[in-house]
Length: 637
Image: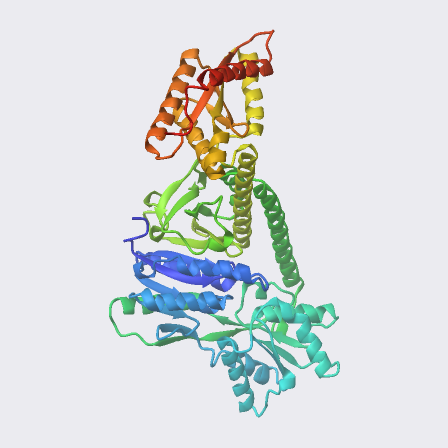
């Protein structure tokens, strides 16, 4: 059963470690649990720089869910940094889902949507700066050019300026990236365009860019808000702790999740629901616009908050480094799981954790063939109520996600995150938390370390397999598949050592094919090769315990066997000859395949060494060959 047949919704979101995503998932899954639904959160961490292979690996996760099996879908596609993943999820939802679908913060196909009132989102902050602060010189830092949120916020800002008889020129506009990377570039552009002067206010389309701009200004000696006012949007937690605290625009994420839930219920029950629901915003006035003064206490509070955050981050980075070192040397799943056990507690309030892997032939499959997910998968790591289960290898159908025994009886949130190394898909992880817990940045580090460890383990297995293959080639006769002369040298000395140290016996059976030259000269070497393979098959067919066969020369063979009696040797030779007789009668060849045999039984004997035992066996074999020379006819009549 797994999750199949249980009441559940799927939430598709990227970057759950970011504050908005974290709060949205928390509020939405809480609302769903009240209604008796499990929340299955398909989460992507997002891209790393311009790594196309990593993005391709992330895209695999879009093919994991059984979209048709959910009672509801919530799409947070505006959070995706991987546009292909977002579009693939949307395409598969449209193709497979018959349940209610609610999109949040982005219009998606014809689905009902919860939106920030972005058309009016910048109105309150813009009016505040113009009316309350009497500013007329404003510089605007927009988001990614063409991004729906960026476009609407910019249009709103322009519209409000126009109401006051002002116009936003290109000289007072910069397109950022909605992240912390553009602070220096924004300030450089402002100073260059305005010949070293600053505007009265820099209005940013989100808090991350605003904080980056503040830091860049402060590094150059400017004082905020004395020299310039800076404002943001989103009111992230950091906005209240930065120095100076950041004036921002708040959207009510809890209200957004609640409204999305109400929309889902209406759609589920077949009741009328508005195509769009809008969530309003409000200005949060703080120090960066001058509405609140900095006090010794506020500075002390901000400093303490920053120090605590720095200390947590430093400890997290150290733990992540130690974890990476511990995991990269693991050689099997028990070692890997033991390493996970040492560090998983850094995920605050985690309850259960699972690694579910594809059913691949790990030693042989190429990375390029590790795409998507197999129908049957295996749970190879399991922590239940924070306790590690040993030797775990539990099969589960992909659509079930987890076996029944690992699923809570009470509806709650489960995070599903892909495991991959660049493009190669390994499987996925599942984690859930006690109340108050959620995914943090350490979990991201942990999954990267696990993925790297799996790739290392896979490469080690492939290397071991290759070494074994090469070793076999080194000691294997290509024509017959028996071990070759080098293999005979290694095995005979190893087994003879057992005779000397453990008092055991070793049988040596020398076998020489009769008439190989006649067959080669009369019918060609291809027929001679056939005859040699027949004799090798006869040796294999005669074996009944742990005998080892060798082709040590052109027509020369040996068999070694531990603890053989003379009776055992005679039975072996009899079975071999019987096999050859059957071939000679039924193969339809114009020649017969015969072999002469001799043997010796090595035991502890100070007067004999291994070479002398081998010579004894050979002498007996040559005696039989001479005896049978006029009896055995190689060429049939």
